[in-house]
Image (cartoon, rainbow, N blue to C red; front, side, top):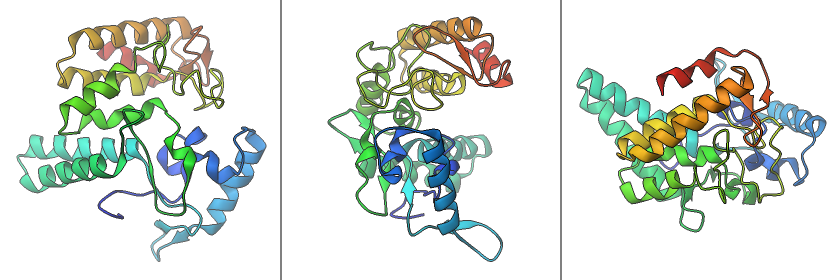
Length: 245
């Protein structure tokens, strides 16, 4: 941890491997898979591992992703509630507060990732996973402002579910891995956050577009949010999460 936040030392650890938020490390705003692969391996080469094989540092890349911290905080709070364990509740709530304090971007009305190595402007590129701290923030106003963008067509809202990157962003590509497609597992988490905020209409809309996307895409891993064209693995089991909505 750094400054009370969980950090990663390689983009792969975030799960959102090719997100435009990592573009500053690539050295170019234009995306190319070969370039990404080269940079991935360069960052892997500079990763520092502990004696028992845990990745603990990287002189080129140390970032606290907003989504990674949000999911972790939510998991800690949920575990604490299930077990009646105050220590887990405290850990989750402290992490949520630290995330609000360090990562809230008032201009975008989203949370941004926090870099601990250099000034990385690409971390402020609006991506839909920046809404996930709505799961755990104690600030209801922040949660509502971020969540509303998921169905706003001028932001993330699209016919087949929230696009991962704003259509107005140069990085936006609705068919490219983590550069624009909709993801069913993220849609589920957005709906959970909206339900906690008692935003019934938003839950209903997210449920509708997710089911529409799943069916149109043939239960694909992810899909084009504008057309519903299935991408990645087909079928992918996590697309069945639509049933939970």
